[in-house]
Length: 310
Image (cartoon, rainbow, N blue to C red; front, side, top):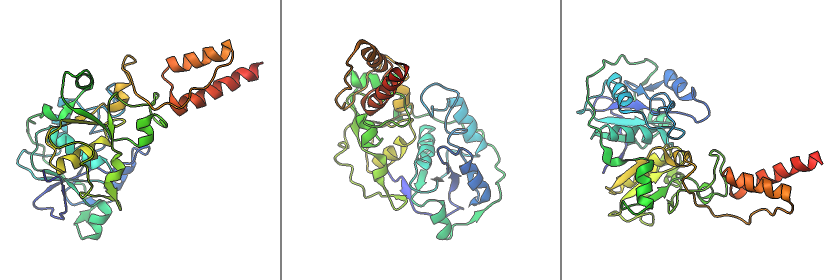
């Protein structure tokens, strides 16, 4: 499948600007207002490409109704050829691309170049916000590329064929480091390929070798922390000809929302509890889901509070 392309053509293609900056939710919209590819509409990660009112992870999947409204107000039709861009080497354009594929759009691509590079190469840009006529498009949702928590459980239990592929860093995958989610670790049985290894010089390297990740005939379910950074890994696998792909949009943050779900972790030696009080602290922290380095740090902190009281 041809996913990543080089083009400056604003006549043949409809354009979507997906620039975003995690931690600065207005940054992408502000950049779009300054200038953007002529005719491009803006899709915001949290306002358009996620249902933040849902509890299914940190960037939950939009409902079908929300996606229908997004597609229609963007003026898209099934016959359109669409190119999505972001700042380059980021996961946001891939998120928009995947949502469009989920909505049944066939001719949709990710720009290899980010906005600054597109501009430098001569793409027509403007600060004018396009007046887009809405459409009555009815998306043909492709459920075969979507995975939810129940589907992932079926893979773990052997009821569905497939491998789980974690797109987070090796440290987060191992549970050694977890800066965002409350529980460190990974979904049981998952393999790992850090999505950032796909990026070279601020753009995606389509020559990246993924043969060690999975064989092309194997069904693969890709996930990350919240379903965002898994999208470029999914897109690159699609570029390489992998056909049986699904994205677990809720990802790890959705998986750990159910306290009954197990996680795997490469644990360091557990901290030692030398008396009844510190044993109680350790037991409480483990019950609360702390593990690995986070457990060590939290245990030492709680123990220091206990010592201060003495």
